[in-house]
Image: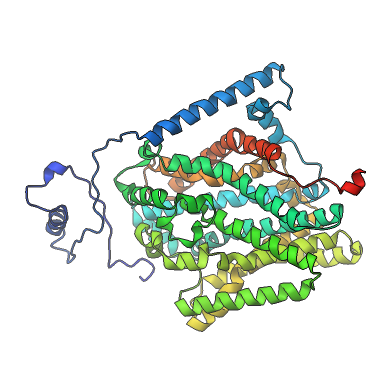
Amino acid sequence: MNMFGRKVLHRYLCMPLTEFGSGVSMKGYTDGLIDEEIKNIGLNASSEILACSNGLVTPSLYDYILCAFFVIYVTIVLLGTILDVAGRTPERHFIVKFSLRYNWKHLLKTSRSQDYTRLKCIQGIRFLNMILVIESHVKLMYVWFNPKHPEYMEQMNQMLIVRLLNHTDLFLVQTFFMISAWLLVIKIYDIQKKLGRFSFKHMCIILLNRYFRLAVTLAISLAVIKSDLFMFNIVSPITIVTENARKQSCENNWLATLLFYNNIFYCKDICHPVTWYLSADFQLFVLVALIFYCALKYKLDHKYLWVTLYLTAYIIYGCVIYYFDVEVLNRPQIRNFEQVPFLESFPMLVHYQSTLSNILTSYIGILLGKAYIKSKTLNRTEDLKLIKLFWLPAFIFLPLIAVYLSTIEYSRIMTAIIEPVLKPLFALGIGVGILGMVNLGGVLKRMLESRFLEVMGNVSYCTYIYHMFVLLWYLEYCSMDMSTVNIVQDLGVVVGLSFVLGLLTTLVFELPGQHIQQLLLPQIPRQSKSKDA
């Protein structure tokens, strides 16, 4: 019973303003109307949120400027595509960088890097993980927007497998954090190997390029979200709470999203809420790069350094959990994830969004990155025996153990002890699985390296940024009738459309942005100047 909390029932009511008589408040009228309807079942009504709309949107100057920008930009893309297809303009020409044909070829082009080839299975994992992220948001929308037949939701949540899947949703982004740190470690050691050192200048160049690579696509999505004209089609009585939150957050806090520090706000105060992950990821990216710079420059003992940093982060995070007395991972119970409680959830801020709650996963990524580099030089025979023995059990059971432990209720002190290790444990299992596939190969590795999954992995960033547009639009057309068939159908449609939109925005915005970035921003040289000479 605690999982569903039937003491409170939420209901949306839509009525014309002509219903209200003179001198009657909207709250008083609606409360009285519903009280009359439910007077025989022992419940009382109270209006929580009241909102009025005449159904019209007046375009602002901002909307006109945004429309003009898109018209000009699409014209540039079409012109670049026409010139590229005609073959009259060399590929190095600036305008061709916007060509759909040129960017499609670039998307399909496979890197010749040895590390990329060995770690190509990561692309498949990114794609599959992105599907699971979308799946978690589809379920969240069902909880938010009052579906038909909620008893189906209660029946399904009584099943252990469903509860485990719901808890798994809270771990999914840990895979992205772990991979991000892993790849950064490889990049840093590659720079040190080729150039002889990893300097402060190199660190700044990496961070600058990382910022602009993320920010260009993000800025486009923010521009659209800030516009009432573009977002009006997804506004309805059931989305009025999120619409009000969108207006206020994008008016007050859009810069926090663009500068990657919006994860310090409640969800309702974040302009484009899913971008909290980008903020946490960029902050961790900066932290890892800075720590590595100091460690390499001052020749610090790496084992002592990382053990010290891990234990320090573990103790601080555990103390925060104990001080605020929040339960493990903000349990995915239905009442916790309803629209208003979720948008103002302090446990979500502590457990999910904060940089502190995800830093230990980045440390796991560092550990795996160093293990990967070391695995290329150690005794292959002995190492392969060890990897062959442990990689598959770790890949399967470590994430399962982390998820299962998150379903158990603990005392306050035990929560502070156990919670900090759950996310790193989940990420460690996925990472060891990748390490095993890299060194041993096998059917699973070949599947994850398939051409389709590789390409879809390359569009996962834009898919993540834009999939909420698809989901909110789809809410206007789906039945919200909960059943297994309908949920699978809705998930299939949303996933398919999200990746189509992700592919389109990758070709139109992300890849042209990367080409311009490489032209305008400083890049890490391929080799040292002494070698050039």
